[in-house]
Amino acid sequence: MNYQEIVKTVQDLCKGADISDYKKHLAVEVQITGEGEGVFYIEARDGKVYVEPYDYHDRDVRLITSADNFLKIANGELDPVKAFFTGKLKIDGSVDKALEFKNIVDSVNKSTEK
Image (cartoon, rainbow, N blue to C red; front, side, top):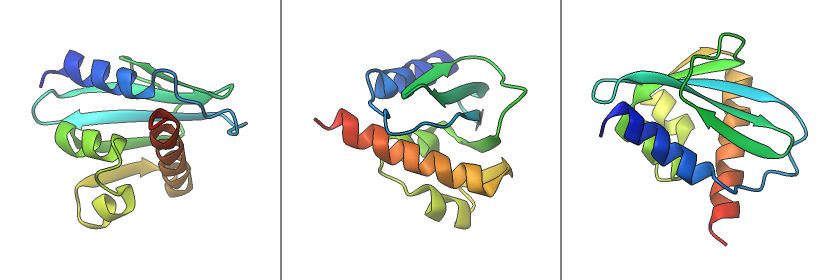
């Protein structure tokens, strides 16, 4: 999977996700390593999730992982906490914000199951 396909897959996963209960702002930069290497960001604001293929210099946290592991996390197939403790996911920045991101991923997965 190349970089553009990864970003498109994450955009499709988040499209129409309802996180209206989330009233804060969170900016997460995702750094994909290995195949499909690149950087994109996921931003939660105004009850919606935005995914864009750009660096986010004012980010709250950066997640560093392979495309395969990130897509498993995004799909709810891999717990990000377990991925962190097994070395499949690295966190640069606030661990609290990374845990907040986990809650957003859970909400996105619940809202898209309907």
